[in-house]
Length: 119
Image (cartoon, rainbow, N blue to C red; front, side):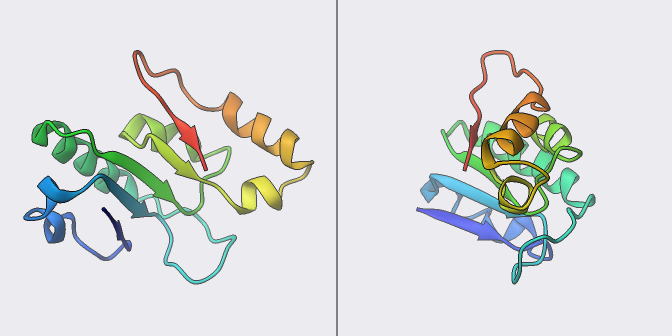
């Protein structure tokens, strides 16, 4: 089971079900339509979610969806996200899907012992 949190939904809302979760998706835009800009104030929320997961000792996937692009991908990964959902920057970018994916993946910082997936 997993849970998705809108930008205005506090992390505390999942505190009591964390032990039942396999994944947490942090929305970094307000859902509704593609192409929205990343909300920078979501970076601390991603960091706190990563810390909650680490403190739980559980293997919970932390994903981010919304505004994942060349200029936001590194801070999102550095904050603790390990699964990234990218739509507009892949399918609406300035090149082919492959070229856009290559540009994004080149911006992902190396994570010692880490694993990252792009969806």
